[in-house]
Amino acid sequence: VVCHALTGNASLHAWWGDLLGDGKAFDTSKYFVVCCNILGSCYGSTSPQSENPATGKPYGKDFPDISVKDTVRLQLSLLKDAVKAKSIKCVVGGSFGGMQAVEFAVQGGQDNGDFTETDGSPFVKAALPIACGAYHNSWQIGISEVQRQSIYADPFWNTDEPSKATKGLSVARQLGMISYRTAQGYQSKFGRSLQDESSTPYGSSTNWKTKSYLEYQGEKFLSRFDPVTYVKMTEQMDSHDVARGRADTVKEVLGAVHIPVLVLGIDSDILYPLADQEELADGFANSRLKVITSPDGHDGFLLEQDQVATSITDFLSELKH
Image (cartoon, rainbow, N blue to C red; front, side):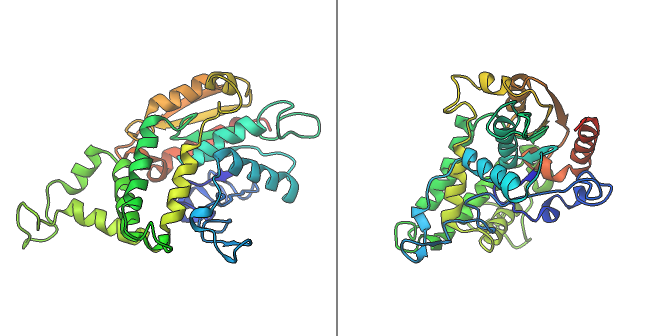
């Protein structure tokens, strides 16, 4: 099972294409590979843009609050009851997908747990979370909140057409694009270069390459996401906390999971720093941490496909199930 991130989708080939196919990390000659759209996403599951049967109109802001726990329980139910899978060899995901992988391990990776085989053994046999933690911490919630505030500040947000709050969504995406990378990466890519020679060297009309890049990314994003869904999805990320409703500490919850877990972290990640992955690896009963080297920050889980693929392939080859 592969879990997608915030703005990803079930089309695994579109964002981890080098990992999918015969002889690759997700070897389709060996494995039945499943990737589901997150509940609430705009890529195929029920979302704020879906019709509310009670009104005949899109849910919009009335779309219910959903947790990562809800999303994973739905996927586990789908795999067990609809797909009729006997077990899951491994769950892999990065960022928001990594949070789901952690939750898969907690819900389906314990003897006599919530999801088991008929003999009571874990339904999920292994997990590989990448670039995430056991909970969304205050730093990550803060970044999500500023993105949402950008959308709330759009004049359309408080009208009957909040889906038109696209200027706010564009700014939210631009902020995200900064948090996914590093200062070193931005300086290396753009420096203090101007987009064109006619631009003034400083002041309000200066067209920095950095500015042009961010505006382009913000505008491009509008063709595939909407403001209400972005708010709801970031709120779902903020719900991530494996201890909530289960125990007093994260360590108690993770320590009850004995399936093999490989945690991958990225050495330059400022959004989900290595301390988060170290806590995960220390918490799970049968886990270890591997560090991906990258100058690209959090986006390294997508860009360093060779390192990620090797880690996944080696880990899957170690598993007995």
